[in-house]
Length: 62
Length: 157
Image (tube, rainbow over all chains, first blue to last red; front, side):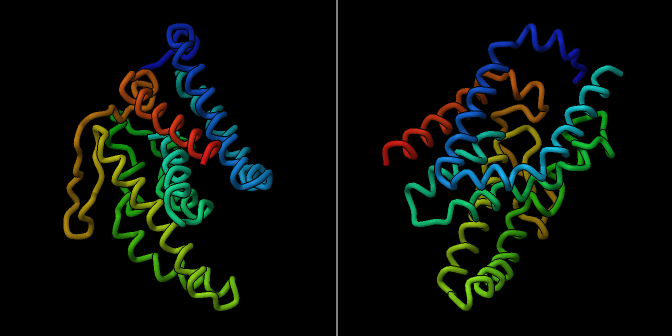
């Protein structure tokens, strides 16, 4: 599916915000249950997450 | 499914004596086959044909076969505590199997009977394509129900 990111965000800002809030709630619940060290476990995956976002943005611009 | 892979383990953990960390790890394990797609090493023109969800990591048999391995490792780590090891192994495998079964609701389906059959079984309710999935009211409603239910159980049970 072809997506222009800025246009997609403008058209679907409500969806984006709902997903963002639900994601933060889920993360909060996991941290609440397992403790703050969960964040330390997630931290090594953060660079991969950044790489993925950059690659997706590059691909969407093609 | 995106957030349901976190919410369902939280719900199960509150209802049954399972290990949350093992459930979450098991629930996340199938998605390691998404890495080639995510780092764009193998980008297919058709999203349904991508490597994600087409590997052995998205089959129930993998989590049945790996159960004794996880049991052994967890038992050794916990100085021979077989029951702790079994609890970890069951939680991990259950997390993986539930992940695979829940994703049968999408357009692609999953190889439920692998290695007997390479057929993708599905009950087509949700789209598979990422961008379509994000803007589908049905998927958002289901994911919201799981997230809210898990929040209620975690905060009040």
